[in-house]
Image 1 (cartoon, rainbow over the protein chains, first blue to last red):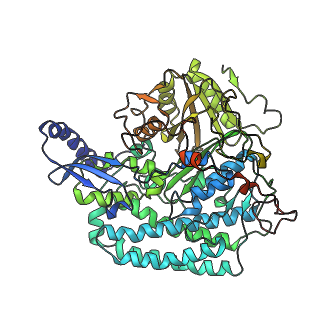
Image 2: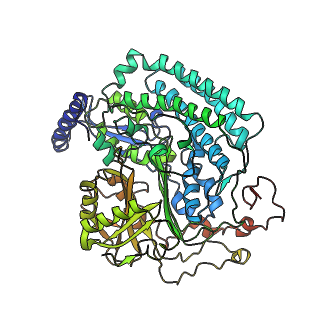
Image 3: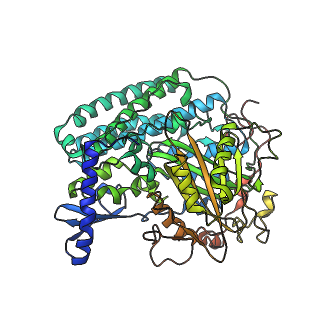
Length: 392
Length: 231
C-alpha cells in the first residue's frame, strides 16, 4: 500500500529472524514456553496467550480464546427480533449501545423502514457516548499496563459522568437496550442536553490530562514507540479495523465511508485521525484523538437536534421480510457488523456476528514474533480488546 | 452469463444501483464460468455465488485484480429448516405456524443448491475511491463438506475458518492448523448446524406467549414496541 518506513522494515527483519529460529527451537526442544493467562490482569478477562521464548525474545506465540464463549449466534436463532438486542448488548460491554445499532440497522434495511431524523441524531449521540465510555477506559487502563496506576482513577471518575448521562436517557448504565427497529424507545429527558455538553467538556479536559500524563512521558514513549509494528497490508489481510487500522496509515472510517443511512455522522463536521507508524504508540494516540473527536460530534449534534417523532410507523408484531442484509458500523473497537438472514419469521434464521476484537486479536501471533516479553503486555493493551467481543 | 440473476424481478419498482451493477458485470467477466449466481440489492450490497472449485481463484481475483484487500469475515450457513422449530411450546398464541421441519430447503440471495454454504465478505478501503464490497458464496455438497482454504491469500481467514470448521463441520483444505478455537478439544458435534439441539431450550421450552401479549388499543406515547410515533 505505502512504502515501508525504516521502523516497519526493522520489525520485519525481527519477525523473520524469529521465524528462522522456530525450527531450531522445536527440534532441540530448548527454550521455554511462557503461559500468560487465562487469568492475567493484562487480558481483561480470560484470554490465554502462550509464547515460546528464546531468552527474552518471543519466537512463537499463540492465542487461546473461548473461555467465555456464550454462543450468541445460536441463541439469536431462538429469539424474536426485539429480544436479540438484549443479548448483543453484552458483546462489547464497555460500549453497549454501539452493539445494538448495526443489528437494528440491518433489520431496518430488510423491513425498508427509516428512523425519523430526531431518532437518527439521538442514536448517533448515544453511539458516540458509548464510544467515549469505552475509550476512556482504554486510556486509563493503558497506564496500568505500564505500571502507572493514577490514570485509571481519573478514567473511572470521568467515565462515571458519561454513564450517568446514558442512564438518564436509557435507564441502564451498562446495558441500555434502548435502540428499536424504526427509532428509539424514548425521547431525551428534560435538561439533558446542557448536562451532556458539560460532561463533554469534562471529557476533553480528561483527554488533555491523559496527554500530559502519558503521551509526553519518556517511559511511555520508550515502551511504545517502534514496538508491535503492523504494516498496512498485514492489517488489512487480518481484517484489523477501527483505530488499529487507522494507526497503520489506512484512512478508512465506516462513519464516513460506510454509507450508513441510519446514523447522522454525515451531518456534522469531524475528522478521521490516522497515524503512519503502525506501532503501539500510534494506536494509543489515534484512540486519544478519537475520544476528543467523539465529544465534538456529540456537541454538534446536541446543538442541531431536530424536533419530531422518535419512532417510525412499525407493526406491533415485528416480522422481518425474507432476505439477507449486512450492516457494519464503526464501533469503539472497530468495524462491527451483523449478517442477518431472515425467512420472514418472528426471529432471525441466522445471524453472523462480525465483532472487531476477534479480527483485531487474530493478528497477535503474527505481531508477537520477535518482541520482548514485557512488550507482549503493551502490544495487547494497545491492540485493545474486550473479551466479550472476541468470544461472543 | 449468470443463470440465477434474481435482480430482474425487482427492477421494475426498485431503484437501480448502477455502481454495483457495473462492478457485478466486471466481476462476472473476470470470473467467467465460475459465477453461478448473483444478486444486487440497490444501495445495500452485492452478492456473488461461485462454484466450490473456483472458490480460491475467485477470492484471489477479487483481491488482486479488483483491489478488495480488506478481509471482513468468513462463515457458513446451514439452510436446513430447524427440526426443533423455535423451541416454543406455545405455537398457538402467535397465530404464526411453526416452521415445517420437513419443508424443502430454501436458500437466500444469489441462490444455492445445497444445505451448506460458505460465504465471505471482502472490501476495498482505498481512498478516494468509493468504499466497495462484495459477499462471495459457495455451495458445498452434503456428502463432501470440504473447500479450499483462503489463508494463503488472507492470513486473517485462519481463525474464521477454524470457527467455521468447529461450528459447521466444514473442512478447509490447506489450512495451517485446523483445530478448535472456542470449544474444548474433546467437544463432539457442530453447534451451529440446525440439527444440533439447544439443550437449555429442550429442557425448558420458552413460554412464547410473553412476547406477543396483545397491546392495548391506545399506544402509550413513546412506547417503542407499538405503532406509536408520529401518529
